[in-house]
Image (cartoon, rainbow, N blue to C red; front, side, top):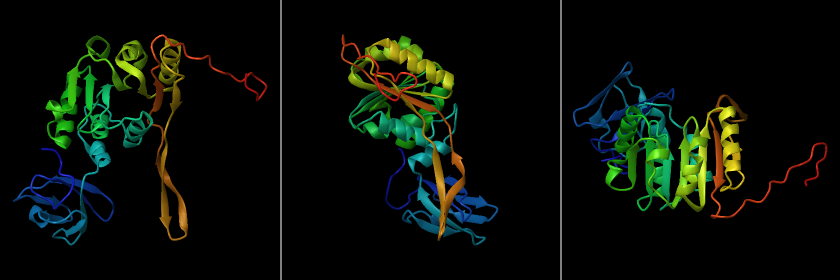
Length: 283
């Protein structure tokens, strides 16, 4: 089974304990289990049967706040075969690519399965996600991470394919395609054939060189609208009384996102309008 989402803690639940310094520990509850730290021990029986948001104390007197994982916490803490897509980018992919309940989605470049978890939640039980991963070792890690969170969706709305997207894809009329790989431009033609008119392609790339190549190939392909490229930066704020200021650290650049929509077959995209140099007027 996957994680329980609500109700009192039970044996088998994964619980996140946060100490006064905001250090987090994840434990899986067992009837006779004990969580040991340098601040003392906490018997799992102190948590079983308690509601989320409870406070438990170690034998050394330190208070810990107990909650189940949020999906963003789980994806950041999951075992990794490859780098994970950060929650800030995963949430932008789900939102800006408009991944909706019931959607049929393809992702290529599964990594450790972080984005897969977000996509499966977004499409819901009526939708379907097919994930393509070239490397078997990454696919194995992703499968374990996804099944740990959701249980076993393999018979339901998730299919994991070990292989190259271009040579392995066997689907048509899909709603969304998400590409997280070194050279997403190599897949643009295959994506165009798989997407339904109006569908969205979304590419996640790390460098400006990849960004430029991806945009130009999508732009020149002829089946897509003008690609939109951007990045998201997240900055926390310190708020304590009248002391309100930006945090000293932030989650800066992690990757660029590029989105475009599939046009109807046989339709030529209208020419782009460019501003001539030296003027603010458009052509």
